Image (cartoon, rainbow, N blue to C red):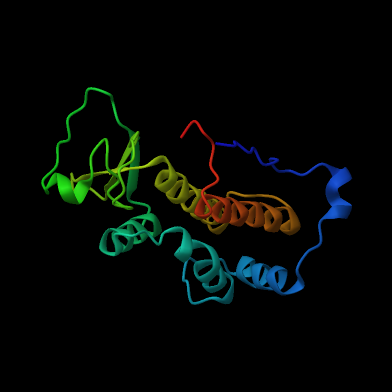
Length: 183
């Protein structure tokens, strides 16, 4: 497996001439930034849901995928590492939750080093490193736009835009199966 590590923002000034702002995407971001909302009907979030969030959280197990999407949106999803000796404490069958050797989202036999809990249900679902990378990429995006919405990010609008684009790239890479090997 090849491990890629993308450059972190802020980008060096020397790379500035290599980047070109897409005028439509930037205009959508600026309009959203004027009155930031988590309402996915605005053009900025609608595009990101269609192009990035939706595909990234589209797993084989559709019903669980939808529950994960809702938990991510509501900021109620918990991801935690699985201790090697921990036995699952769940209220649903292990077939639904996967297990340390089967991913609950993909249904594939994979070593699952993490598990998720949706809200305070007490039900844990074991997930593969690939699924964890996809969920984490989407969570990182939502965390950043929540920070903008709450006024916690105090940067030039173009720097915020490029951070959003970097987070979108991370979602795309995770969806394609590229993620750090330490997951």
